[in-house]
Image (cartoon, rainbow, N blue to C red; front, side):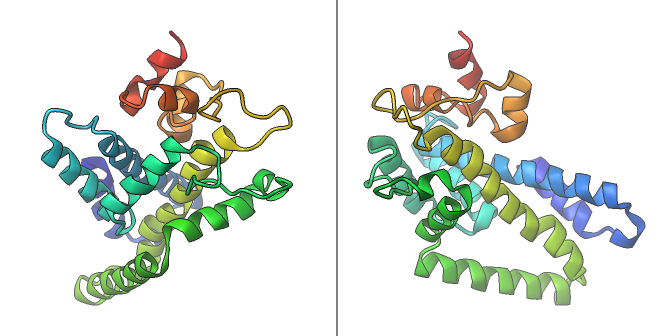
Length: 227
């Protein structure tokens, strides 16, 4: 969280005209990665693994993470996430895009749009849009932050992070394959090395292990995958 906040404050204050294109791409990549880390922290808080001994503090950290991520409700996300664990890859799973012929289940872009539609319902979408407008207004007019900086280092990381989380944490693990699912988790794991698993999505690609051992925080999933 400190890396996320510090990088945001620093990058919002920079004159991007003096940064190379490669530097901008690298900055957006790092911001996206750190932004995804906020959601991973919130996800662990949903499973009570951030501070297991103190539920109130654990949930407070989760709420801070989801609010910082995209002005989302921690409790609402937690309820939907537990439905996902209870009924993975089924019509009862809010993360799943189910069609009779599974045509769209193999289409990542269509599934992503349905996925986002489920999480950004009317109320949540209004909160997000109003929040973005207010933050833009305060930072651009009150603190003279360039709109370009806000778009590059705040808005784009939200979008790219949502795609990263969906693709590596939902689509690849839970997509329907011709041979069907192997067990009740209806999930499969990536075969990436520990390094690339971390880079792609904080080991969220070790998804079967997460469903089998939901009490493990993200940084311990490799021990379950490669034990």
